[in-house]
Amino acid sequence: MKHFVIRYQYGPKEVEECMSAWWRKKYKAPLIALLAMFCVFGVIAAVNRNAIWMVPSVTGVFGFLMFVVRERNAVGREKESIEGTYHVKDPFMRVEIDHEIRTTVSNTKNSIPLAGVEGVTVTKNMIVLLLAHDMSLGLKKDSFERGTAEECLAFMKEQVEKNRRDRKKFSRRKK
Image (tube, rainbow, N blue to C red; front, side, top):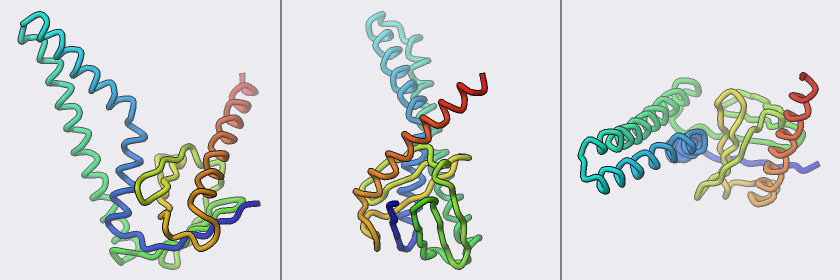
């Protein structure tokens, strides 16, 4: 069984990187749809030389701006939540991953079953685990005390695929 230990300070930069990655992964399809809407209706307006076709295109721009504002607000709320929960701005986080994920933050311990990992994405400095119930967990790449970021990423990708197969099996059994 693989075993990883990650210890790092979960400061405002880490919160922002983790939350932004979560938002972009979760809302990737709607963002692509907004971009397509902007482009398609913009082209139609240009081809037909009719400004009325720009209205849906502009709506796509407003949709994108709303997404950016909501993401910024969510990052701000998460920073406030961390400070309110742990009474410090930059709590130290310790994460252990083996048969489950165990987190310790300022003497608060939690465990997450590996079956709760629904996805994984990578940013410049972090591996972001996308968890059940619209949660995420950022693992700072340069803070591995046991194992490496590359090994952990491979392990988590395997786990995500296993979880998908298990969910498919379970949903077939229910029918």
